[in-house]
Length: 147
Image 1 (tube, rainbow, N blue to C red):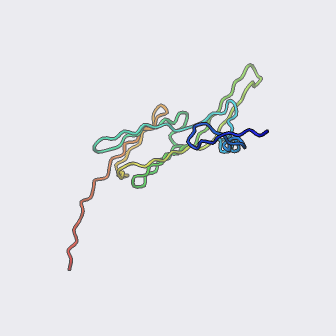
Image 2: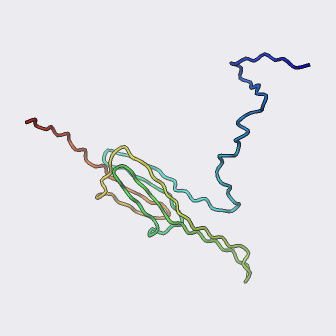
Image 3: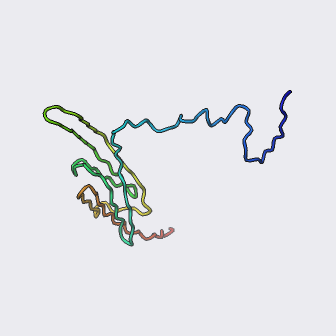
C-alpha cells in the first residue's frame, strides 16, 4: 500500500521525492583543485582614508620592486606583480626536493574620490607596498550664462 503524507508548504523540512536538487550541482562550481605544497599567492591590503589622501598597505612578499606595477585611472587603482618563487632542498649532492612557481597576481579596487596621479607616491620595503594617494581637489560647479 502507498504511503500517504500531508504536504505543508510552510514546513522547514523537505519532502522532495527526487532528492535534493542541490546535490546535482554540488561541487560543480568549486574552485580548481590545489595541489599539495603549491603556493597560493594573494595580495592582502589595508586601505585607510583621511581628509586629504588614501593610504594603502599591500603585502606582496618575495617580489622585487621592479616586478610591481601600479596604475591609477580616476578612482580606480590596480596593483599587479610578477611572482617568482623558487625553493630547493639539498642533502649532499642529491636534490631531494625542488619547487618553482611563476605567476602573476593582481588586485584592483575603486575609491570614493578621484586620485591625483601626479602627487601619488609608492614605496616598497620588506614585502609591503605603501601607496600614498592624495585626493583630487573638488572642482566647484560653474554656472553658465544664458545668452
